[in-house]
Image (tube, rainbow, N blue to C red; front, side, top):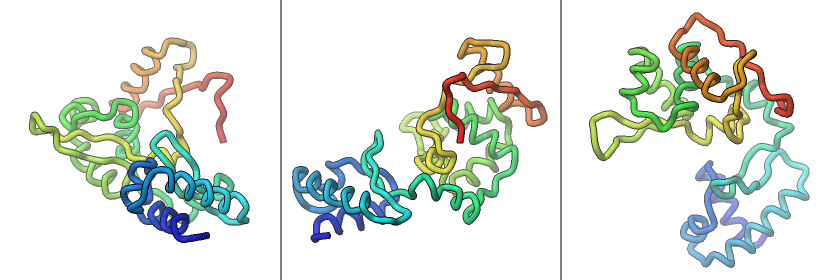
Length: 193
């Protein structure tokens, strides 16, 4: 691989998140057309390798990631260490986010004050101060989507009910009640690995 493709590869590796062509051009200190050519070359090179990594285009830009057939290794080698409460808080953030920490406390209770730092430390949640108000906004990160292999949150429906609002209400109830279980049913055309 000539210089620019290798530079783009290094940038994608070091950033560890999707980058658009404009940001890649800025970081590589070249123009957009050269980055596009370098990406094509890099993607072609990875497509012909028999390796575990690939360069893919996502909604947020281009990223270097593990090929789908090796994703099982993530859970095996890097298991998440989250309790049920933290997982439920993570689910609430994913469904409602970005959400203010104050609203999250109202939804989930004071346990949020322990869950959010834990989720931030594990890289599943990003916390940022709002310009107005004292409460921070929390939202899931790309790591959340990659780890749980979710491109977008599917429209779920509660068994026996078909409206999306009924599903959201049931999920909120599940987030509020630590001991209750909600039986969810995916649409017939949904794929599950």
